[in-house]
Image (cartoon, helix red, strand yellow):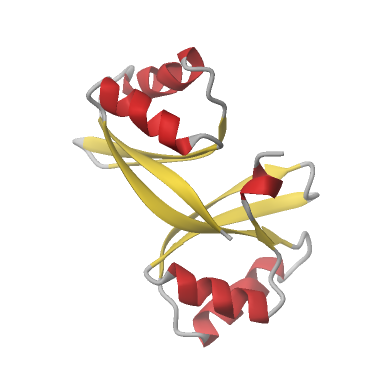
Length: 142
């Protein structure tokens, strides 16, 4: 249940995030969720979209640097300790989280966290065996 994420590299200047989002809008591609990280010089816009291949082509056609990565999305129970329980599984397996970001989902009744692991296959195995509810493409983009 890995998801494909696009990481778009942008100059840290006014209008660049808008331009990246406008490209998706003009192509009729809906952004399900996004995260933006920055430095003084550049930013990385991370997005999840249903048709990532077409989104990647749109960015490349517009000379935007884009990278494809695999991520894992998990439903976080809406209660004290919901996230801590998932992180206990990850920590107990010795897995490294490179980054994570979250978003809320009315369908799931709470938060979904997107994780980038150094070893996503091992993370999937450990999380599934511990009963962590993971989200795949079918659920995320329904």
